[in-house]
Amino acid sequence: MADKCKGITAHAGKAFIMQRQLAANKIIVAGLQETFSKQQSAIASVGDYMRIIPPAKSPDGSEGPEGDVEIWINNKIPCDPTNKDTTIKEHHLQVVDRGPKFFILNVTTPWLSIDLLCGHAPQTWGDDADKRAIAFWGAVATAIHKRKHSPSQVPMMLLIDANNDI
Image (tube, rainbow, N blue to C red; front, side):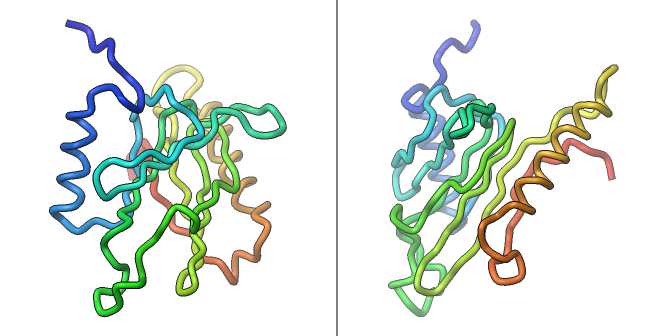
């Protein structure tokens, strides 16, 4: 039977299983690809996790990640186990850029400032594989370089399915 239920509220069991696995392993941040969410521009709660789903369109009208990528952040596990006040909350988050199959989320707290880039590179097979890969990585490079803050002051973490043999 075809899987016809997709989106932020569909298959709540799958989202619950994912959050349970992440929580059991004390994962604070996870970048997910191929999530197939129909909801865009949302922060949804799944247990103790915030599920960040970026807008489908940029303010300039260009395409966004099309429900393909999400970042999940636990808002109960402290980043510093010795300080319970080091949890990441919704007001610490801002989507600062997006493109086809990627987005950049800035996390700014009193004790942490970092950009998280979550992406899903195109498959590296087929007639136009080179063209798709060059377009994707070009868009990612442009987004990284145009960040409003100095990359030397704000580190970046890459959460990506590179779809590449190394």
